[in-house]
Image (cartoon, rainbow, N blue to C red; front, side):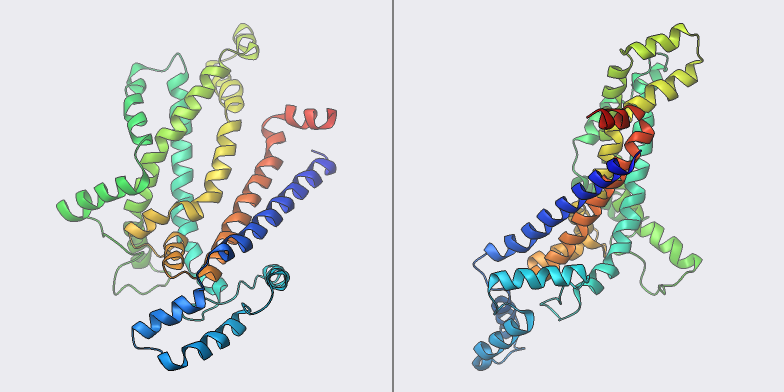
Length: 335
C-alpha cells in the first residue's frame, strides 16, 4: 500500500463529506415551514408563551439561531461551526446539539455495533458452510429459515418479540436502556440491567440480519468455488480446511466487508424504528424526536455524525482491501 493510494482515498472521503454536509444544510431549508415559529406556536398552545409577544420572540430567536441572515452567510457560518464541532442548539430546549448526540451515541453504537458484528460473523460463517459441498445436510436445512428471517423488517420482529417475551411470557423488559432505580454507574447491577434491556432490540437486528449475511456469503462462495485457483489448490493436495478458509472464504469476503462497513456506518440512523419501539435512548430515537419537533438543527447534527461515520468506515475499508486482496493494490498501481 503506497502513499498515493492512501491520499486518493482520503481525498475521496473529504469530497463525500463536503457534498453530504452541503446537502445536509440545503435540504432542511427547502421546507416552507419556519422551525422557530412552529416551536413557539407549540409552546403558546401549551400556555408557555405570551401570544401577544409572539412576533417579537420569533425575531429574537431567529437572530439567536442566525436564521435572519442571508442563505450564503448561513452556509459559511455553518461550515465554521461544523469544523469546530459546534452544531448549534436544539430549538426544543436550547441544549447544545453535540451534548444531545454524545448522550445518545454510546447507546446506539454499543448495542447496534455488537448486534451487527454478531450477525455478520455468524451469517458469514453459516453462509460459507452452506455453499461448501462437504458440509452436512443438517446445516442446509436452515436455508428456508434464513430466507424467511431476511425478509422480515427489524421493527416487525421487535413487535413480535415484545408480545412474546414481555407480555405473553414476561421475562424481559419492554423498554428503556436500564431499569428504574438502577444507578447509572459501573456496577454488576447496571451491566446486567443494560444487557437485559438490550436483548430484544439487539436480538431483532441479529435475527433478521443473519439471513442477509448468510445468503450473500453463500452466493459469493458458490461463485468462488468455480474459480481456477480453487481447482488448483485441490490438485495440489492442500488440506480441506486451508482450501476452505484461505482460498474460498478469504476471496468471497470482499463484498461482505464492504457491506459490513456500510452497515456499521448506517446503523446510527437505520435503527430509528427499533429504538422508537423499545424506547431506547439512542440516536435513532433522538432523530425521531428531532423530526417530530421540526428541530432541523438537531437533525443536521445527527445526520452529519452519521455521514462522517459512514464515510470514515468506508475509508478504513478501502485501506483494508489491499491487505485482504493484494490484487487491488496491484491494479491501483497499474492504473
